[in-house]
Image 1 (cartoon, one colour):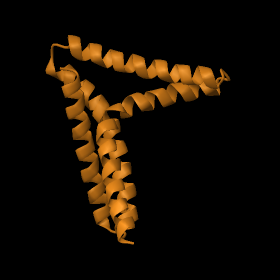
Image 2 (cartoon, rainbow, N blue to C red):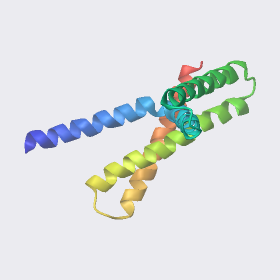
Image 3 (cartoon, one colour):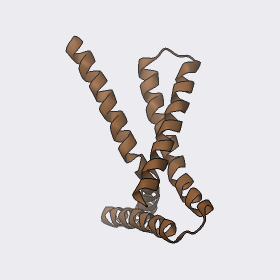
Length: 134
């Protein structure tokens, strides 16, 4: 029983660390999913859907890097950062909310903890994105 509890704690921390590292890719994943599902619904086939998803994600990342490389104003940099941090905040909210529902009794604290998780994950994504593009 004690070993199982220890493994659960380690697993939660590992999942949170993975969420921090991959939060920067929430927007490209969302765009890739939209492009892939649109291609699949148009009866293009599964291979074309995967190709469309990959191309959409790569184009989005390249456009964001170019926008940050040639941006002269801080407003443009902030817009790109917010565009990447907002989907990460949604993903962080849902991930932390799932953990909170599994570990806490039903109360307003679940919402509070989930919102704090969303803010933390969004700020981590913002920090990673600004560090990656300097």
